[in-house]
Amino acid sequence: MRKSEWSDEELIQLLKQMPKIEDNRHPRDIYQNIPQRKRKSIQWVFPSIAAIAALFLFFILVPKFMDGNQHSTDKAADRESAQTGEVKKEASQKSTADKREMTSVASEAERTAIYADEIGNGQVLTYWIPDEQAEFLVPVSNIVTETQGKTWVELFNEKASELKEPEWGLTDYYPLNASVNIDQQKNVVLVDVPYGHQYGQGSANERLFINSLKKDVASNSTIKQIELSTGGNTGIEFGNTGIEDQLTVSNDKNRAFFFYYPQGSEQPFIVPYDDTPYNDVQSAFGAMMGDPPKTNLQKSILPSFGIENVASEGKTLIISFKSNAALEDNQQTLLSLEAILLTAKDFGFDKVSVSNPPVSTIGPFDLTKAIDVPVAPNKRDF
Image (cartoon, rainbow, N blue to C red):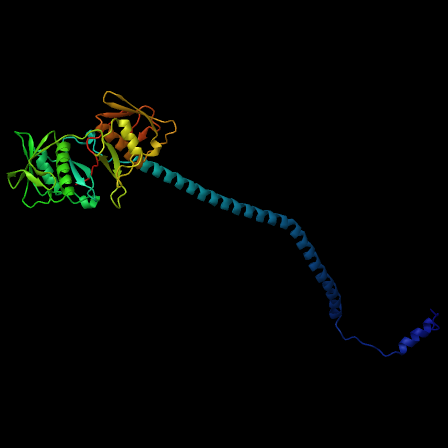
């Protein structure tokens, strides 16, 4: 840089010659300009510090926030898991309750025949009613409690009008178109039909009438003779056999019992097959497990029974089962057991004992003890 040619004195004189400049501002205003610049600087610094502090807090709080979120998520998951567990628990409890209910239902299977322990002072009445197609006779029984010293024939006549044959899926047959009485001195039953009666019209009517009379008397008494009359005159004329004045009553024996399901019914009648007596009870059981002898009958012993051997000890029939026999405590098994008990009775046995029971109980029956045979089949309310 070139050295100035002006001397100090010359510069002073030059400045003195320049116009005078006056600043009319108050000194306070001039002073305020300085803090404002500083405040601008401070205003710039504070946001920077705030940003740094915020960033610092961010790094401190974010992990805690994330931990909190994770904790909340874990709690939500725990709640969801707990709710799922509760639902599963309720479902399990419901399933257990259902199983208990099913077990309860199974254990409440009801016997369908009449047994000695329920008769008390009552009188058992059995009616033999034709099935819906009038092919065979179905025994139906009940207990009459208010006997009032009446004979079984009087009770039989009174209750005949209370039968519910159509409701049971049977032929509407009783009361008979006849008067039925008893001669106690002669110990015979007297049957008198009116003129023009229907029982001699056709072989089916004749057969059913004669067989029902015999079975009614045999089931309800020890009487062995029936005397027939028409309008008070001896004898009844039938189309096939002519005039009959007497019938001999005999107890049918050695029969097998099968199931008969009336149309629309889920509960069968247990019915004896009269046409073929069997040589022994084991043969009868074999027939009850096989093909039924009539179209409208069904086998009455379930395949699950698996009877292996049958023996006797006095008046007790002893049954042994195969090792793979799978009996269940339910109504169907109980019905099969009752068919066995009724068949055993027909062969002269008073009790049935199981030597190796696959289950301890079937319905009300204790298979670990000898079981009494029924008094009468097919209990129905009159």
